[in-house]
Image 1 (cartoon, helix red, strand yellow):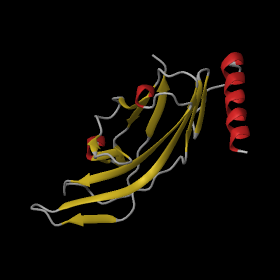
Image 2 (tube, one colour; image 1 turned 180 degrees about the vertical axis):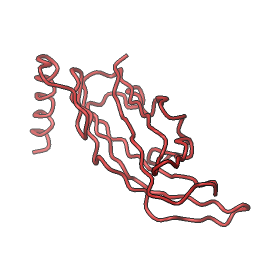
Image 3 (cartoon, rainbow, N blue to C red; image 1 turned 90 degrees about the horizontal axis):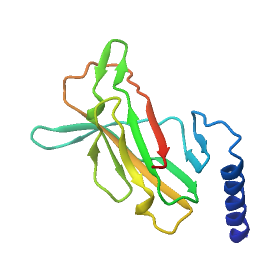
Length: 162
């Protein structure tokens, strides 16, 4: 049964690759002429406030394995880009650089400034595969200067085929 599903996915990808008559849209699934990018969710909530007893104390909101990114492509030369906006609550802002991310089994890295793109995965990291799964965790580190509020931001994930 698993073989049939794999072949069906390959056939669908080939049909999409050759005909390319579908729009690439925003949302949880984007179709490209070279492949498919699918997000497990269009919303990530950062969870409850956590504190680590360092000097000074480290306070943050964290959610592990918050977003699963599925990629299907026949082309080995691809990159997954991530960018975003600053967090906002009315007139108050939290810089995007306070958000950290990591892939499963990795270490947290700070986001680049709002509007900057960051390569978070490349096809060369997954040789000889048609399906890729990338699990991301996020942590918003607080500095103590943030105004109370309900903050939100927009993150953008894009595939490019250089």
